[in-house]
Length: 57
Length: 302
Image (cartoon, each protein chain N blue to C red):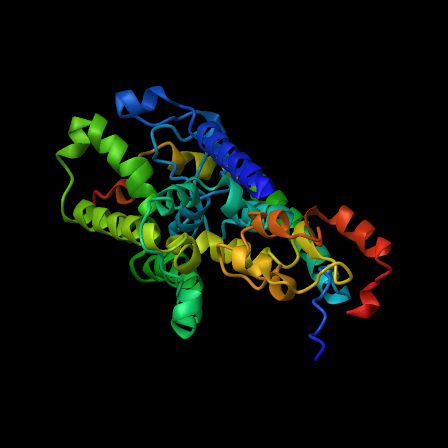
């Protein structure tokens, strides 16, 4: 009996559209985040020792 | 076999370099302090705790939780955008090649011992456990900080606080070893987190990357992008003889010819290295298309 052919790993049209949309959303999210100066908020948290992370609570 | 050996060496070198580059603030390990420079505005792609004394960047999961927990931050667009960008470009390649905690588990798995292959021996349990990543992401990373913020006005990064073994390994142990003041504050939570780390370490000896497979929320995020990421896997049906070597070799037990782009593939490349026909290619989209054209296949043939 012939076994089914494996699929060649190429994006379907739906997947291509989904990828393009996600790239667009990513760009928008990054832009909004940068405009709102969220990098400063990330920095503010990241430069303090996260007590929970190290097991002090 | 030589191909496979070369690939494994190459991957170990890349994983080591990624660990060093992301954690290059070496004096921090001696002083018991963390890096506080501007590079920490950017999230690292892997599960790399930002409280690690050496960390030069922020942890994406920690930053995401902080954004959701903070009453003034609202939606953390920047962190979500970065996570999405990493996922769309590389998918779970990050897990296989760049994540320091993934490498830690891999190194432990090299210890000689009987190995457990849950996908083979307990397929049903394995399939159920795979949902653990999504549960961790939705429950502890997203919902708990959000709910606590709504109910109490301020949330906590629940995953980092109660589970993340990467934080214990990369931040807790080195910081508490070098900083006496912090050591005095360690209590039940540290004991709990050490137990989690120990459990993951023991399981890693028996099972290949148990945390990445069953618990890592970052793996769940990148897994979502795996099918459409630019860095992808392709199997040429005209060259594939269905010998099954790729699937047997795959450390994540992914049925490569049928679901190579599924959420569990970490793009380690071992399938391509053992394929005797050279039917498997891993890389960015362009060469996949060229290969498709060469084999005379179009999207319509799917």
